[in-house]
Length: 175
Image (cartoon, rainbow, N blue to C red; front, top):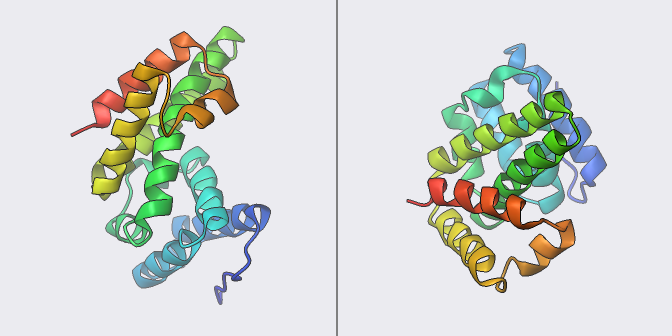
């Protein structure tokens, strides 16, 4: 298959491309160099990165449980976009697990737990200083109630219990 990621990639297109791409990874029809090249291209734009992470982190395929060196190397090529999305994915997945449990939806809660675990694994393996900076900024925002991540936390309406869980996840990921 000839892979081409359009320059003006929409989030919806990124989701579709990422799904096809993961199928190609799973079937081993892609070479290692192709895997790294495709992810590098996807994460070079915010829509591409968001689509990739949504698909990769929520996939029922086990590829995301053990990221390959090609995945890690590709993620390192866009430190600003990747670090921002990994920090936000960590926060959102840990908070959503609480929401799902409150709604007695254990299956969805476990899905959020999986996303949180996979995100943690990526944070640890990508090892970007920028991720550490952003984790500290998120922690500071939760502690002080103001800061860089205040609009993000307000937008999603996280309550005190959710913020506490986010803070705990952040603290476990700060080196």
